[in-house]
Image (cartoon, rainbow, N blue to C red; front, side, top):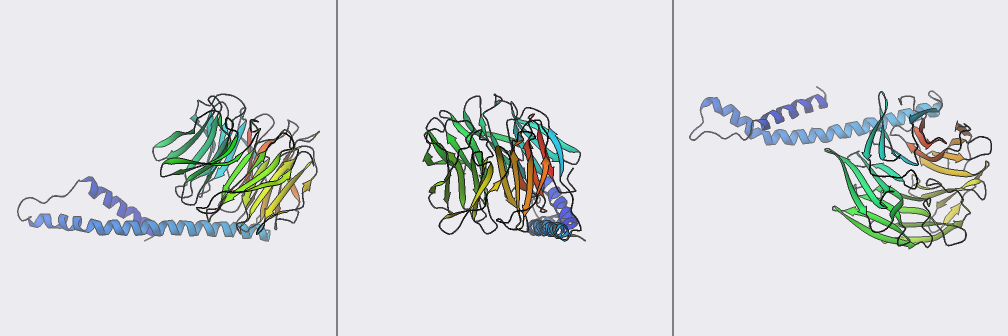
Length: 427
């Protein structure tokens, strides 16, 4: 009999026994007909131990199966046995001004979006399902949201800026539904917020405090939010200032953001190891980034744990990226071409290949291109997944599902959300 079948039987038996309430033998010596019940009750502790062990074994088997699926899919693609083209579909029609994509450890794709309210668009067998999380957002511009999945529970959390009252808020899904909390509310706080999780499941948020002109970091520890000031940012009031926060598997936290000082904006980077203080790299470069979008500067970690920063630069009509070495940053060859780059994102798949999503606002069409590099610094052929003339797609977000397939979500020029993937099994 399979472990999962045994587990189901034991769970049903244990639940039925517990439903009877405590078994209290009658006063005096129990009769012969009571001995079997007493013996079963005495063995419940042992059964619960076995159930716990089988649950752990079942989780390990599922993780192993997921890893095997990822390896099989990647090998099939690499060998040419499976090489599907990109498939793009519209998953939400509206007037979205901010969105964020995350794929859960089980492969569930979910998109958070601001469209007068905070909404969640969830992938399902029949298509995509839209639900409202918070309808008190207000405003049709200026807000932003960031979704990630909890590393232990697999459930989503969303950090977002409430335009109506200038608050930073956090929503998380639990067994009883969504719980919404206000992280910070003094003045105008929360613009540009970006969410990550530590390996042990603590939510982490980077954001701008406009009232205090500061770049901030918050972590929820034992139920309370702890705040760290990263840098004073004199002209942080621009609603489009981007920031991106990431946390690696070894609990290294890092963020990049755009710093304005009255002249050219500069790219700033700050990081901290597990339990260490934040350390700033004050300038990765000065770039004239006009019409900047929330996804125009991005950060990720390489498979070996090195930070990799990307920026879409209007001044050079190209995309720049840097990789952090032992003590300094190395600028890699830029990707040039096209008018007004407006968004860039990248992610590594299960084989360590680097996938890029690059959005441009060209004079004739508004393309969104993707490419896959076998190594970070080696250019690769680009595939166009959006080339309509309805205005520029923006806020492109790249993600990799657990089986190794890349996916991209973005907002088209009409305010609709589109989702593109190469996974042939995605509805």
